[in-house]
Length: 182
Length: 90
Image (tube, rainbow over all chains, first blue to last red; front, side, top):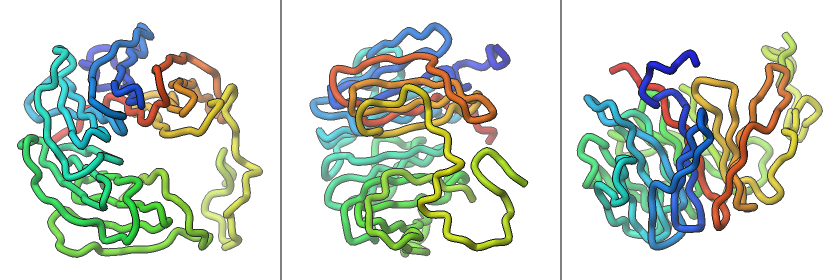
């Protein structure tokens, strides 16, 4: 394999999170699957990330048990747990930026170099339930999608969101996934 | 220029909403709602999680054809998938 010299930062592992209150990692070369995370309720989202100056990938999981947990993939217990205001509905990671969207429209911004506290907490500028958050590719901000079919662009260091719009087509439907390409 | 997913740099401004004629469906798709999907950052591999409790991993060819590569199961609906990432240079 072309990327065999890179330590697992090459898309060789897949994480999946489920309503069975756990997350599993599948190794794409051996096709072996192991449980790597556990929560007290549905695990709604899982993302890999890597801390600067570290060679080992880590995992963050967000759950309806209102916590996000960090896992280093070596031990059964989480290396850290942070309690959110409400159930976690969506998360995304880019570089050191972690964005957590919960019920009641809370959005928590975490700097993964200081992962045990919220760098910033805001209420979604959208009127309705947050369905998805997606980081900008340069980690300067993130997009928020709601169940009403609207989308907001939010810079981390800006007080106000720059743009709130509807997707073309006009139909007010749930935004399930967003991908931001700057 | 015609690409797999339609005509690029077209000068016409026709409404493309609902036009599926150039879409390619995956073979053996999930049997219930798809909850999340993600492409591998390094290979033409697509992973799809579904409410049917399964995670499906497809190899995608350049013409859009898909081939099942692996499937594994949770004890309940799967909500989210993510690939380990390529290291970002500082």
